[in-house]
Amino acid sequence: MKTVRLTMAQAALRFLDSQYVEYDGREIKFVEGVFGIFGHGVVVGLGEALAAGNSSLRFYQAKNEQGAGHAAVGFAKQNNRLKMMAVCSSIGPGALNMVNAAATATANHIPALFLPSDAFACRQPDPVLQQIEIPVDYTNTASDSFRAVSRYWDRVHRPEQLMTAFINAFRVLADPAETGAVTISLPQDVQGEAYEYPEEFLAKRVHHIERRIPTGGQIDRAAAMLRAAKKPLVICGGGVRYSCAGKALEAFCQNFHIPFAETQGGKGTVLWDNPYNLSGIGNTGSLAANKLAKEADLIIGAGTRLGDFTTCSKWLFQNPDCAILGINAASFDAYKMNAEPVIADAKLTLEALTRAVSGYKSQWGDRIRTVKEEWNAEVDRLYGEDASPAPDGKPLLSQARVLGELNDRLLPKDTIVVSGSGSIPSDMQRVWRVRTADTYHMEYAFSCMGYEVAAALGTKIAFPDREVVAIVGDGAYTMLHSELLTAVQEGKKIIVVVLDNAGFHCIDNLQGSQGIDHFGNEWKTRDKVGRLAGASVQVDYAKNGESWGALGLRARTPEELASAVREALASAGPVVIDVKTSAKTMTGGYENWWRVGTAQVSVNPEVEKAAKAMAAEAARARQF
Image 1 (tube, rainbow, N blue to C red):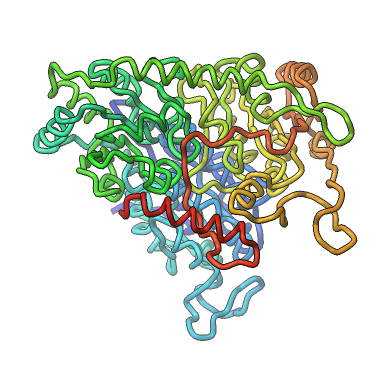
Image 2 (cartoon, rainbow, N blue to C red):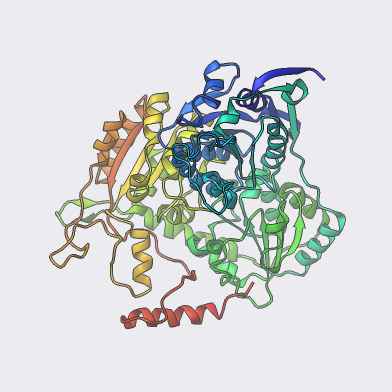
């Protein structure tokens, strides 16, 4: 067997650079590059290999390790999981900063390879700088923190272990059902150790992403459930998007007169004006979708993991005769809520069901059209809301109006919009009208604050010729926006629209809904009695953007917003638009419910009242 002498880090890069995927006959280079920050644990190992330039992998210098991970996730998500990035860090703090990003990848089933450095395998200099020592388990280091959030985890104690570690890593990364964060911990001394690696290990490797074919039995059982249903409803999840099943879903719904609603992951697979598209469902869903979901006697969950926001904490499907059919490549998700599982590809399953069932029409009749028209009128109303006065007497935009201006009037229809936390995803799932497929980019499985700006950078790297707009609240922007500097450095134009309502008002709304007085969520100074109830803290986010090297713009009225967006679209580089919005101007709930752990005993009678109401609604929800 021919070999080549390389350090473990050099072999790792050679291997990564040789990975391809094949999907529906297309061969695609799988690993595009590496995001990271060099510290002492990585700079002379993996950093040396990157500096040598012996691979086509481009290194992106991040400014925060969590941001690096989010950028990698955003890149892979926008590429429908057919391209990905690796992310590297030093040991200790640098590694731990990536844990949130790894969890985000795993929750969303997005491939991302995390390569945290680790303490010395030889242990000679221990405790090395930034090493965590656990006296009862010396093998437990900071990198072990990734175990809980990774789909596969390994540590390379010897250079030859890289081979089995990386082969298993890509077994998971290229599997639609299993993919997510993969963590391979790299001790800093082992990164520089040499080994005679077989050329076979370093050769081009093609991972064939196979569509899992539904069995005849699965289709027969699913077809029987459909024929027995009077009012079926499809939930379009992320699996529909990733399997490129949009056309199959459209044909299925049109053929059988079945409405469908969208999860955050599935939204935008089919355009908003499709007559069967009822927009978002569940806790952040539309009135149209939630009305019909309560009446449905069959829920067809296509590529969805049926999270609590989608099902209103298992409360939404109120028809006592409602059955659930779970179509999912991942058996873990196909079985959710006691569903009849079809463990298969969404596209192939919808196509097979369409062929298997003939002469069937649902009994929804004209209800689909009427609830959709009712919802469209409500969205038009929200999009046209007037600005409201602020305490200083100047006008402020409503959050819904900003989304309407951006969506209906100001952004090109093929703009990719990115968001991920706070109240903005709730509003966008309900009211954003997707006019070009796959332009709605929302991270809501983990809802990780700080995803937005970094993921917009990853999305722009994935699609450099598209406009990419991150719509982010002031809370999430403040939490993590450091990759704005990376966007400036790389010359990647992203437009960041900051909706500033001076606080964490999404959570403040939840707090108020459970009888709790405003506490700790509004951005206010301390008052005379020491509570955070004084004057609102004023921040100029446009000036903050300018400090990073971006163009900073401001807006408080529809006219100012239109002017700012026009200037941003004409700009050659990154832009931050600071939009002052009124608090409490998000969209409301539409026949939804969400279970939270409200205090059953409190000095505040409104809290106890809310807890009783919560218990009463929980009794109406399905138990599993």
